[in-house]
Length: 346
Image 1 (tube, rainbow, N blue to C red):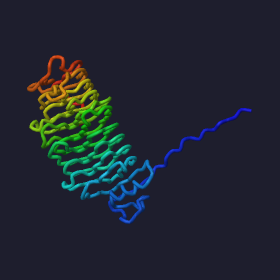
Image 2 (tube, helix red, strand yellow; image 1 turned 30 degrees about the vertical axis):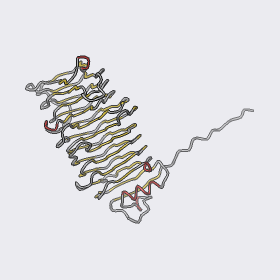
Image 3 (cartoon, one colour; image 1 turned 180 degrees about the horizontal axis):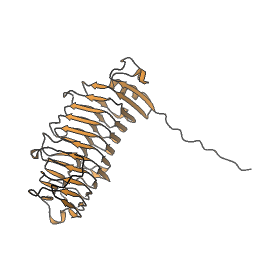
Image 4 (cartoon, one colour; image 1 turned 90 degrees about the vertical axis):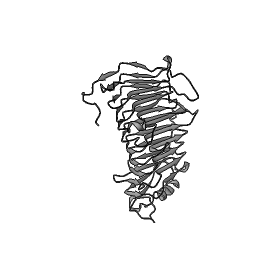
């Protein structure tokens, strides 16, 4: 007789749901659409009492008097917007969402507008996704501000399919800690436009690579209008030794200063992009970092891109403070004249 051993399937955690609506019931329990609460903070507090994974469903227009503060207790929570979900700060509140040490979370499908510093500000996140947000009119009149701003000890961050527009400083910014290893970032399929309007040394998409990046990607983004040349805007800015980044299949057009900028990093691969450099000073700035640690910029590649140039300013590449061994490797780039139709839907 043959014994048959049946193994139980691992239990799958049932997802918890909380509902919040701007015209909801302040005394509701938030556990169904009919009993939705009216406060984002109350929805957060209810979700904290429930097992994860959990989803907070939000709908309606929330006029905020202060940011939604999130912390480690909010790990495992997804914030999911309904068709009319919108957060507004009336130009006075510093940011819509501020999260510290949040893990395994997502922010999806709602609008954020009219905040003073950042639309969403996350510090020390891990395994977080920001997708399908419409972030607009973020005053951001100083450094470390912008539409979507993430900093600190970062692991496995995805910023995908968002629209970010009308910011004084950065559109999408990610700044890892000095010395951090294993940073993995994916910035994909976003539309970023009308950024870098007020503050100098800016990037529409800006990565500050103080750590050691591992396989990060900037791909499929549409970037249009990153400020007047006085704000020194870059379409994609790899700053402070940002390394090992793949930049591919992006569409970049000014006005602005440089289409892309490598500052001190290594092994960055910029390939297959379309850059409308008409009105820019150059399609690419390759610049050694004059600060410590000083190191050779090895392995950077700028290849197989299509660049539209203005005959009056026909600059493809500008090099600064670079020795011959540090110069970016150029190959296979296709130059088209200013009369050619653009490939990107600007």
